[in-house]
Image 1: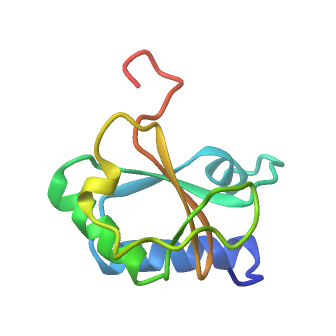
Image 2: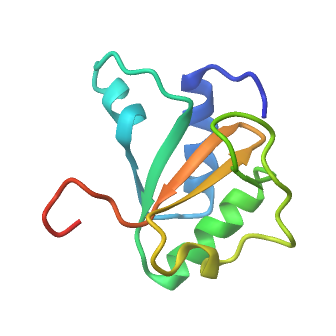
Image 3: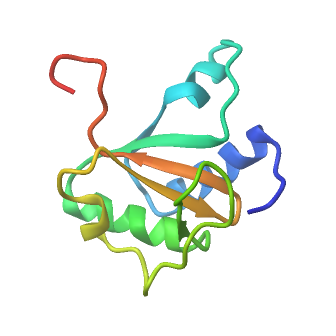
Length: 117
């Protein structure tokens, strides 16, 4: 992971997602800080649209950032066997944590805080 400033990290991640036409929203502490809240976070939380085609575009976009599985709060992560695929973002997991070349990314699959998720 690079030592990118938070704004640069967010810009690089969003640029990759937008380049691949991923439908998503920025979520969590990073989104709050964009609205002026004084929150400190290490990762960008995103919530993708759950359609399989979109999840594949998400996987392709994240593959362009050199992803690794995030296994600890900080650190280099663990090598992904092969490439990310849509299937990695399907199922019952609440989120998938990744370390990329531009920073930490949490793909939130089932956001909480609202009655219907």
